[in-house]
Length: 177
Image 1 (tube, one colour):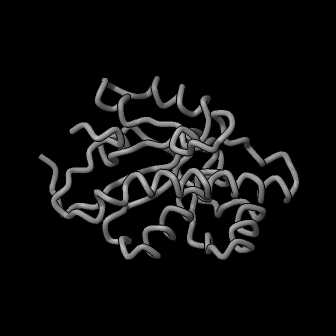
Image 2 (cartoon, rainbow, N blue to C red):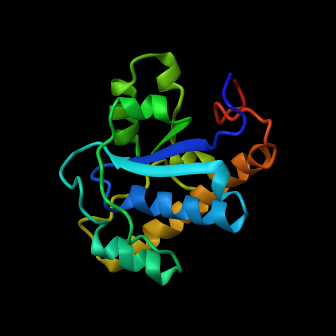
């Protein structure tokens, strides 16, 4: 049985951990803090690749976040590891390529069941993938951040009732234990 006082732990995963997943992490942390639930959520991010490990988020990511009132300056890129499955209750992929990679890395059904696509939480979302803005201009970073905000907000609203109940078990997003 999980410790009811432990925070709900989630990790957002994209390719290099410098664009999309840091955005999602920063938005989730901000939502939790504003709702007075910052201590009940442990959010982080990682990349499927190791190209940018230790680097700050892409300058355009930081600028887009700042334009929307967020601070991403503390972010340092890291790579997703097998230990992250054990360390998190939910593993959120930003697109289907990340989802496939994570499914291949999952050691068992329990780990595979922790994986979800970010846009799957947002009924208003069109498509399944948050596009990678890395090779696009600044405006694409703003568009991607809007998609991420909407989906992370939808995810947070699903989690919030259980987060407000300290004895609730937050094992899987679908409500199963």
